[in-house]
Image (cartoon, rainbow, N blue to C red; front, side, top):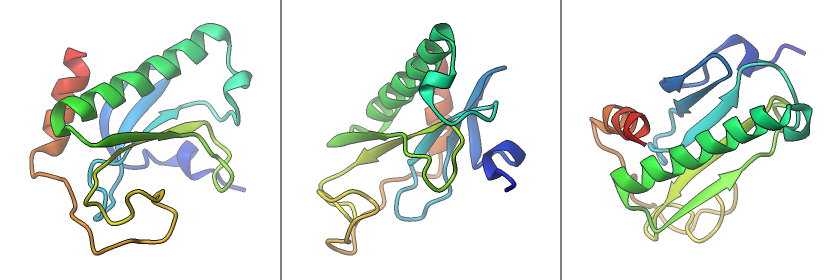
Length: 133
């Protein structure tokens, strides 16, 4: 099986270092949907050394804070599944009471047409917030 997260960025790069990247996912309904993706192909957090675990979680939380700063969402959803793509990555998803699925998860039943909370300068704003954080 060829791992898509090993062979492509997975979205618009907001931050990258030698261990991980933070990307903005191309999702029309959720334009601020981010992922924190570990570069090396591992499946679980416990595959990492303690310092690397701390590094991943630090960037998950930095991403959450950047999204809160830029968008002021009603809630942030954090998830690490890897059932479909067994490569360590975290979903960091700002949620709004008027989005398509709220209060359901994005993978649940849609509740309404919903409002997409994005702006043309969203990627630049998030890059700035991540650097400042």
